Image (cartoon, rainbow, N blue to C red):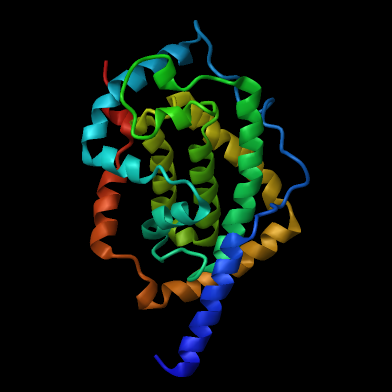
Amino acid sequence: MTRKAAFAFGLLALAGASIAAAPATGYLDGVFDLTTIVPPAPVKGDIRYAADRKVFKATRAMLGTPRGTLATEDVPSSVIAVEKDFSCAAAVTLSPETTPATHRLLAAANADTARANNAAKDHWQRLRPFLIDKGPVCDSKEELAKSYDYPSGHATRGWTFGLILSEAEPDRATPILIRARAYGESRIVCGAHNMSAIDAGRTGASATMQAIRATDAYQRDLAAARRELAAARANPALAPDAASCSAEAALTAPSVLAAVRK
């Protein structure tokens, strides 16, 4: 690497670190209200409540499988961590350093969808599945119990990333949205969320994203991310590891729920 190139890369890394450290403000004024859009949280006697209990019990054995390992790897939920999780699907290494404009876009939209989701969680205050039925989880029960189940924050974030990245890279829409679906399902495998909470997280993210897309700021940032991703994908040095991506694709292609039987 030439001295000039090294200097340029150093500036890019510093810029990426600055973006990662800065709090995301989002695109929307206030909190998008999901409580009249997302169905109410299931309660005893609701057919969804019974289905949630069945799915939780049926998926506990998955923790000891490769899919369980992936679910555990999906636990860290910072924007940077989820960018890493989506790098194979996007066919480029996503990070504040390699794709700073894309990182800024994802972080800002995530701030909006997370705020909306958290307000809905506090509204319904539904208990997590392991507090209703006994069973192992892949995360700290003590930490999980400090917040509520419905809607799932992980599913909200994963679906937010899926919608944005598939819009920025339409030729990669299928693998990106498969990964987004699987990212939410990892919380079912983990035992951290009920099936209904995953569905609600996706619904909430989709609704909030409709409002976000209507803003001029989002459209400007999306255009910048499209240009950046096209250039990054043309750089072989930014391609994710092919073997790891192939293994991940094999695990995420089938839906977790396809394995749930009577």
